[in-house]
Amino acid sequence: MEPKHIAFIMDGNGRWATAHGLGRKDGYAAGLDALKRVLAACVKHKVEVVSVYAFSTENLARPDDEIAAIMNVVKSFNLSYDGDMKIIYMGDIDALDDDVADSVRLVEDRTAGNSQITLNIALNYGAQDDISRACLLSYDHNDFTPKGFEKRLSTAGLPPLDALVRTGGEKRLSNFMLYECAYSELFFLDKMWPDMDGDDVERIFAEFEKRNRKFGK
Ligand code: FPP
Image (tube, rainbow, N blue to C red):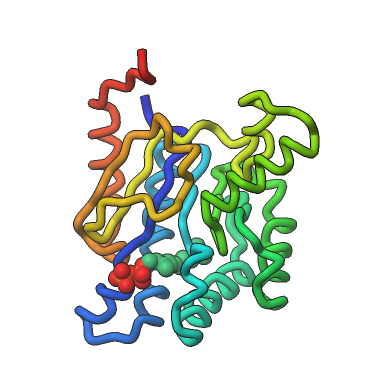
């Protein structure tokens, strides 16, 4: 079986930039190029949804110029994208600067009818925030069933998360999709995100095929 839904924690952009004598800003631009290579490989394998961690609620504590560099990459991607993907966002978009939030709404509207693959971008997202918001909504609707709760997560309606990949050498989830990865296969790669290419995706898929998924049974 191939994964229908795969998530990436795109870590190591800053370290990649430093190792290449570049600024962190260049690391994020190279990170977007890597994402495009990864997406092309996922399209080849008919993956339905790719979720990526572009900016966490905790990343707001980073220096202003670094936040601006990430937001500029995201904004220019949103404004220039004209391909076949459906692009959706999860996270507190309203709390971001108007120009970034507007670009998010625009690209979501513009790509809503696309169906080749869905790119789900986590921006100003934290899983703990998402889970507590879903709890409050379940309370408001007096619906405490697991299905009712899942309906109120940002990932409602997406297929179950089959695999989660983190690049950059760290082995942690950093508040990303904590509820959704209950039965996901986890992959931790030492390479930095901007070095990712289609062959890495092929290797992940080959290993995914070999894993014995038991879902607790
Ligand atoms: C963590 O790596 C990564 C981020 C905080 C942001 C990654 C964002 C992109 C690659 C842009 C993606 C664009 C779109 C449109 C989805 P880090 O830079 O903190 O790495 P480090 O640990 O080496 O410092």
